[in-house]
Length: 231
Image 1 (cartoon, helix red, strand yellow):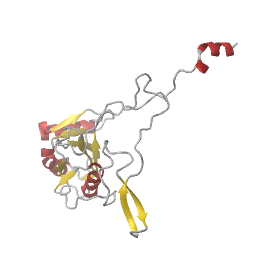
Image 2: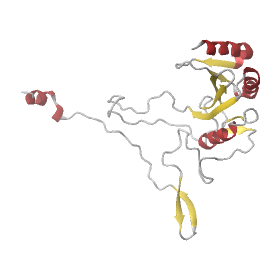
Image 3: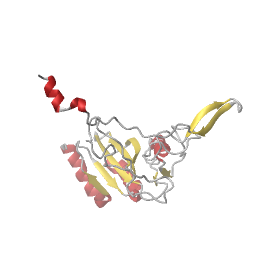
Image 4: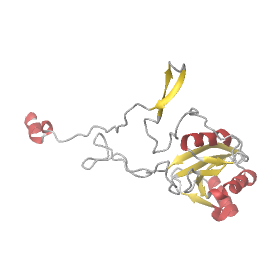
């Protein structure tokens, strides 16, 4: 961490106190977590007082199954081809509430006058659908970024002037970047000659799990045969 970052961190700690919690960084960057109820207040101060006049990016994150090893078998290793799949249960969209730290919104900020960057992370809480306040009134560049997070993760941004899908089609069902979204999707599109237009229908692909090849014991690779071949 450079002196410039440490100076900024000290200024942030003095200004915001316990409102912002510094997160340890492996790459020497400043990252803070804050409660979503403080987002607008903190973001306004970061722009007006600290000098972060530019919002570079806003992105959603789904931490479902974060930190768990997805590719595993009972009797093989976690590396190479010796892997199978065990998928545990996931939280579906119909759940009454989510884990408090399943969904998060991450803000990437740039200070042109100070030539420094920082990152904010806000968890959406347990509500379904997940929701945080929009920062469009603070940084206008958040407009399309928040629409993208809504489209791909289903995160609502309260106060957004035009919150609608931006990457998927109007007839798309679900939010494709959620970890419990089926890889084959929910609907497929084809041209219907009878209707004379493009029509949606339930996806016809059979769901299946792709399992990498697992190398098992084979007498062709036994040590006795190998020693014999070596003379």
